[in-house]
Image (cartoon, rainbow, N blue to C red; front, side, top):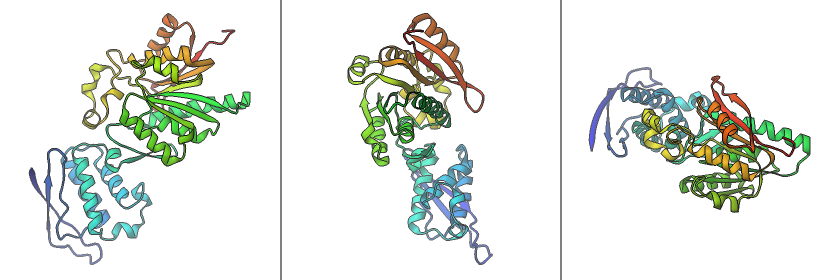
Length: 342
């Protein structure tokens, strides 16, 4: 057990005079980073935000102010600090609120990502439960969902289809599948992940959102369980995936928050970053309906490699196009199974 004593001057907001300097004794465990809340010390939400932002900065925590704001907003029952009333920010926190703030902020001190600390995160119009080490959905993946939705809505408009079927490889928290299901009532999705924890989390999020009836989730590995997937999954109109695409040699360069807490199997794509992607392409040639599409989120170096791979080894597939993300990096690949006249 390590003990650290940090001095902060806490200002009394209502009398306008400085309170006596208080000692905030932080007792932290190397394993869990447990930090004891201050004893006999009143503190407002505003003061707690500044106090923890300084403490995070002192300990080299990334985005110290945002981390403090997100955690304290969560304790106050809001998504962001901007949604908390000015009066509430200036009110003294209750003993229970102080205890929760100190407990959650102490987890952030261990470099645990905020999403795991508060155990939820927003993805598009959904609030999803988060649980370590399940991969945390990124903003780029919201762009991937938008691309898929644009195509599916176009397909529906042209064909007047009353049913659509999709396959997601590597569902994680369920962010992609659940976003698609929420937007398209006619859609059913078969989702799989190599992690049982991820399968359970996707199922839990589906139940919370009332989308479980149109989602079929399985604990399957796309590389090892290809035959089982083919036997369980019907033909689909599309396959979507944000697969592991980092090169194994780049794993050591990840931020501590990612390397220490997120599932490495959801990140490490092998020597060339394409091990899972190759298996997805193989599934696509067998499970996609004619002119069905594959949507992939990949590393910026991968689109030309995947295009060449399709031309050389996947005669049943066409490489349609590459889309850039909001930072103008080539990030998304769209492929299509050939039709009878292609």
